[in-house]
Image (cartoon, rainbow, N blue to C red; front, side, top):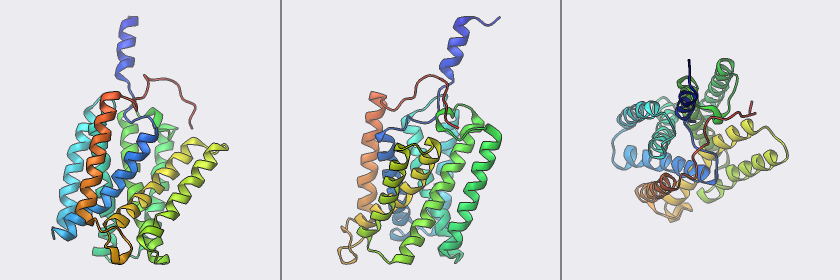
Length: 265
């Protein structure tokens, strides 16, 4: 017969595998997307490592990190955010491989990843009956979550680059469009839009926002940027991510509660 202590112990082990969605979550997410853009460019172009080799190295690192992440029984800031940094790089490289290596137009890549994301969401909901990140407490749901995150990074990269291709905006001006759309999503959520839909829309939009911020910081002054270069931008943002993750590890400000009912659909 199951005792009360056994039930409590089992509950403590069933912790959500992702952080609470706070301001820290969005800050690190944007920082990660910037690193995904600048660090991939630095390794691929500045160091001349090549698109294929860069993709293989970061994909291998991502697989190892995800194995560690899946073996945890709760959210661990260092492991989780390392996975996000690496998946942001790999998601960027997926689009870069289609565009640069295969010559696929950005509007086609954007369409492909939009359809793929819709398919992943559909399959996830059909299997789990929820798309809420407040209930990532099984291996199945965590698998769907990370697959979705990967596709959102690839989609955000393609859509963001396509927008820049269409508009020809400078790096600074290019920051304003995704920022404005994110603020619109925030306003819609405030007046009653679904929290799950609002979250994932904002999650997708932070990818072009972070990438455009990275381009603005890294681009030469002559091109309208701040001239930090891809290495300087990567070091700055990786350092900020590390400091924030250490802070969250110590304070546990983004730790979710023990398993509790949620009403998210």
